[in-house]
Image (cartoon, rainbow, N blue to C red; front, side, top):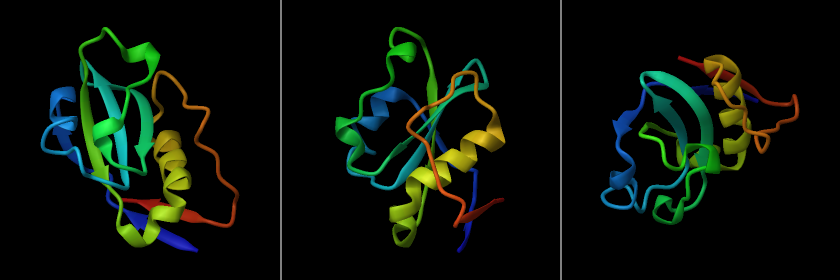
Length: 107
C-alpha cells in the first residue's frame, strides 16, 4: 500500500496541546529544541492526555504537529517510523515499528 503524507505541520508550544489542540487525533509530533528535531512520537488518541517523554521534561521545546488523514489511522505508527527515519532526530523512539507491506512517501 502506498501512503502520501505532507511533512509540513503547525508549530505550537506545549501549553497549546492541552488547550486548543486537546481533541486532535491521528497526529505525528516532532519535538524541536533550538530548531533541531530531537524526538518523534505519535498521538492516536486525544492529545489532551498526552505526556511528553521523560527526556524532554524540564526542557524548553516546541512541537510541530503533522496531521494524518483519518483513513490512515491504522498505519500511524508506521508513518511516524518513516518520518523518524527521514528527519533523523537526536533521540530514537523505540515504539515506532513497522512491517514492510507499507510504503510511505513524504512530501
